[in-house]
Length: 223
Length: 223
Image (cartoon, rainbow over all chains, first blue to last red; front, side, top):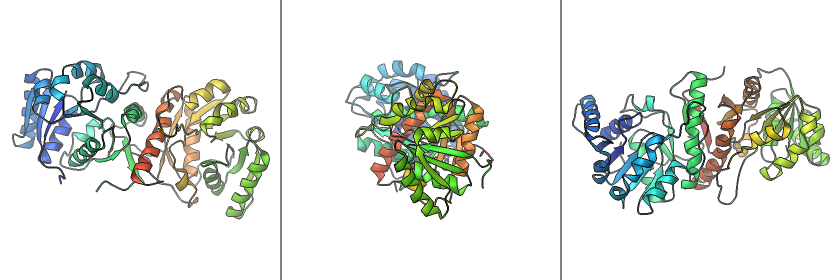
């Protein structure tokens, strides 16, 4: 299934909604996964639960900064309230690496769409240009991601990055997690992708679903 | 095919990219269509071409304001540069009616996503609360819409409106045009839908397509 060589991927703030599903899917694809959390113990607890589910010890738990130091690529899945503080604590650990920002910009209860700058642009600003920042995975429904984690998911990922190679790496990683992914432009486009989350939550509420999301049609696939 | 009774629909600025495809599709579904343009002659010329294609005289052409006066529902498909001026000229004619704003917010060459307010919100502000404004059809690829106009199109419409009945009317009209449509929230959400156009144009360019667009999955259909 995997096009990538085996990689080590840190999932920072990985004990929340999105992290465990991504961790299990990447572990299934043969990657080494490190769950990061503010407290190492919490990350280790979640890693142990996920390993029990896998029947193998493929996932480790660490404090966020240690997790970032231990991997060449980190996926940030914190809630938006924790976004800026998390990034401030990661600047040194992330230099020279790739950060995937998956922050869902949700402003409850009105679900007002986010205003610029996007979370991904803010991440680039805080981390500096020594870090390649990619926006991705914001529109993936967490409920579906966590189920049947060895199966493809009916959801597409829109990937925004100023660095094409970094975008391609994340497109490949998304496919390893069972998700088709498409390049959707530079980081200046990520505000739209982050806003789609507010549409999807509104639509799921309106139609009584937890699995509503978008797919891309009419483009050649990345294979 | 049609769930709606036969209606009269004005397509304002209807000689551009989106108008002719919508006109043919609604005519196929049994609706009476009026193409509007700044100059009545241009609208009449396009209507004549479309009728020749249909083999029946189902589409008329008028100046925008006359078209708006002659129909209970108008779809605005002008380019964003002409948006505000068009609305200023339609205020009187549209009172008590339903306006669908389909304005594509495209800022060439960088395709920077639009900033608030959305075109649909601006339309509501200019027309006043005597007009029910709905944002829809911004993400439909014009090239596909214009082809096989009696067949469904592989594209979904995200409908934003503060008035649920108005949203439902547009969802039904979209279906009559061969497009599935979903309620995506109030007009405060329309800035995101308008921004999706900049993503789609970017993606189509990147992947060398003219048909790339989004579909919604994981929600019950409206039937």
